[in-house]
Image (cartoon, rainbow, N blue to C red; front, side, top):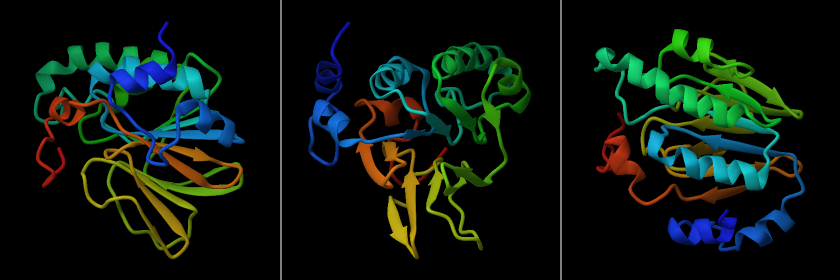
Length: 207
């Protein structure tokens, strides 16, 4: 099996902290939360490799689990969607991580709830993990209550931000890794070509 370093090199990925992956592992105290969103099936193996290396305690997916199938406008592809979602949830749930799904506009609740064996499917809103408060949902929204993090996807906008004590993380822009012990955040690029697979090569809109 390829090392995580070689996988990152071959996928042309990098950590925005400009650290090598092995150095990042030394820096993270843990527990770790992994945030992903809008995932086309072609990148599933890459996500599973990252999970195998980082062994996150929590995984939050903010929707569009099989984003290469635009289910909202292609309901006739539900069978193919179910097949891909099974592959994803099996990979995400095979370890010890607690997995949360916030479904997107191209997801099917009945399919995900049937295929997931130990994941939790939630509406958008507030979630408390290790005494930290997370606002999460497929779409970016402003909420009236305070939180440590706001996790979302669907579109390229807004970018990651920090506002009024809340760290906003866009799961379309990058794979987001949160060290829950100190709220430190690391970003990992998705594989080259991910936006094409999403049908989102233009940064003007989300799908």
